[in-house]
Image (cartoon, rainbow over all chains, first blue to last red; front, side):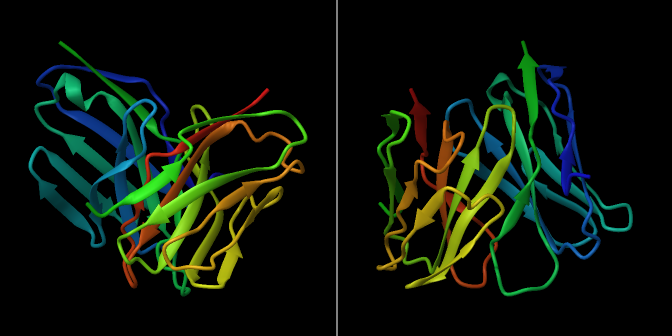
Length: 114
Length: 112
């Protein structure tokens, strides 16, 4: 079983719609959760992170965390063609001193069509 | 501007050759990481270092080696023992007691 799982997609949504990206993780003690966006041929860039159960909003982006269900999601409102990219979910496991050691999912390809 | 510089951006290697990928940061970050990405896959951790002169193996360290002689530099050597080295290599760094990675632009290695 993969430690961090994402639907690889591609997920296709029309411009202006809400895109919903999902991620599940296996380590119940995981503490920190991150969403990165990666354009083709480029390096990942951080969109947002979440540590506590519930929702966290930043502009058009909302991260949702449910630790009981081991589930984290990213909602993109008013999707734009420029949002078309691969979205990577990353998880920091429980405990230890190795801060920053993240486990990544395989990524979900999002396509926003005009 | 502060950031992470990886070089070269593109590299071609013949089978049996060792190659070294450079990673330099001027962010004064303590920890540095090397990840590998294959097409359609997420990032897999090769090596990481949280302090000068110390480093730890990640999930796929076989066939790779690193050094951390200076805080700013964390070069990765892909040795001939790495069976399938063609991939996109990403260097990242992070300040102390943070979990937010900053990535370099990456180096794409192709074995001919």
